[in-house]
Amino acid sequence: MQKKVSLLVVLFFTIFSFFSFAGGESVQDEGGIYNPVPTIMHHIADAHEWHLWGEGDNSFSIPLPVILYSEKGIDIFMASDFNHGRSKVIKEDRVYAIDSHSHIIEEGGLEIIDLSITKNVASMFISVFLLFLIMGTVSKSYSRKNVEPSGLQGFIEPLILFVRDDIIKDNIGKKHEKFTPLLLTFFFFILINNLMGLLPGAANVTGNIAVTFVLSLITFLVTTLFGNKNYWGHIFKPPGVPMALMPIMVPIEIIGMFTKPFALMIRLFANISAGHIIILSLISLIFIAQSAMGTGGAWGVAPVSALFVLFIYCIEVLVAFLQAYIFTLLSSVFIGLAVQDGH
Image (cartoon, rainbow, N blue to C red):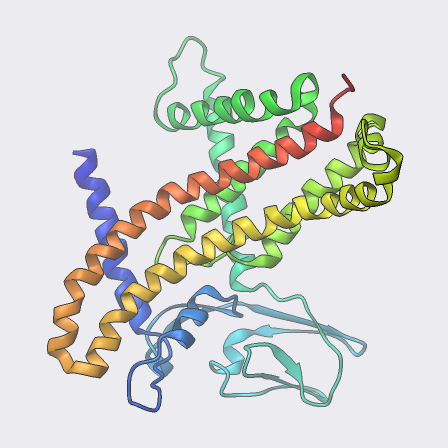
């Protein structure tokens, strides 16, 4: 029964994805063949409105607050004022427009700082709310004594114990308790956003390099601030290295301090973005076939495309857990190397 329900859920997401994708910007190349690149980039990019389906005036989008700061003050209005990029917004002597890259500009050349609640920011608010709701519910369940874990608690508790005992404790050692809350937050924040990103029309939060940059920056700061003398000694005076090689090894160790968080940032960003692009590319095969061979070609490609999308969706659910695990594991390894005592 559970397998049938899971299959129906994935099938629903797949069908909804076709309608959501079909509502993207329709572009054709010189030969009249459908070009899916603008639509794919539109779906994985951040935006000032949450587009769900449809195209043009028939599209359905949720407008989000636009907050712009400049030397002349703060301007706040809704993204719907731009009319999907076709209109300009006038605030006193300031005229705002959306350029070809979906960025807001001030036509008078005024430098502005965009503090808007974009689609990714709104999605992170939702994921943080879900994180507090899930953990609060699980925490309250422990107030009931002599009750075996079940339901949500029965699902979340093994994950918490696995992350704490098999990832954090094994890699950091006796000092693991100080870093357990941070690393558990990493795991569940990334996991929730990975799973939310698989929903049709959802935001691509963990596929945004700015988000993965901040997560990896936190790991870098924790590693740097809590690194002990043994950690810094291995960087500036690697043990067992001849003095003649010190001018080579020390710069390599210093560069390694930055390549580790850089690898964290790129790995999460690239894997999540790649999964979304693959799913959208498989869906776009139907529209490419339609533009090249007509409706018959679209119906011929659709079953194969749908099966592959179903398969990739199932793989992406595994990847959602895997990438949360890998990010938490590597962060634990880097922090463990920084706080371990010398042997």
